[in-house]
Image (cartoon, rainbow over all chains, first blue to last red; front, side):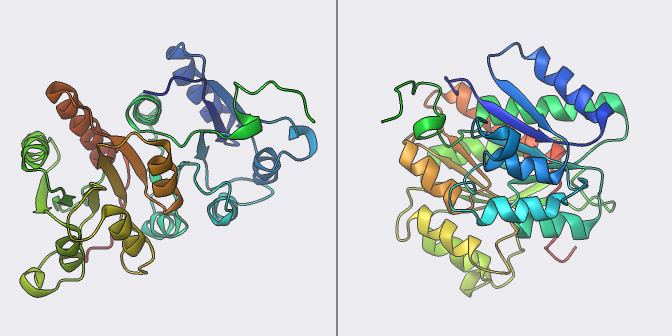
Length: 157
Length: 151
């Protein structure tokens, strides 16, 4: 139900998992774009358009692993969800842990949903497909505003 | 898997004043492969009473998932959402907004109020059922729901 091109940010440090997610994403054959960052600092930089990411689009959806190097995913989640501009972006926690404490904490920190990664790669792929199918075609996402919108091309004043 | 290892059914609170939509949702969820108990309330005041175990709802369970319409009598769904998400005992419960409005300002406002997800109800019957099934597939089988309800 989303017409325009969406930007999905994946914050994930495991190369194997990145690969699987990219595969699932590619199956959809859409115009949507998947951006990958591999640690918590990069995630924050991307979202704040800092450093190498100063032209990064604002993501429409974030898929976030909790166990990220440099800055933990839980901290990143807390930062996103307390930021007045970023908090509206749905964050899907996709992480190894099944621990109730992690689930609880993530929802307390306003994660939109929590998914623990299946060990079996086929089930993992199926989960990722479900995530993409649900969030890109069933759920409505908040629209991008202003300069991030793909439609805006006017020069700066 | 979202059912705990003892196979406890998932408790879903449906907050919906339109009887036709309520009926459709209940039918669709009844067929679910995941055992669930569906509780229906029809206005915003009842929703909060249910969640606070008040009056006739003294024995109500804490829901694992809430499906919330925005346009409710007595207390608007946006208010209900805001109350849920600012209550330390309730805020963890995933709230899926399922409402007619496609208005961007409603979508934005509800995500800002920490709705977990926003879905606009299809007008078409068949599509509506499909959407409820999608909610079931995703929220009952893929997602890990917080285990707050004393199980």
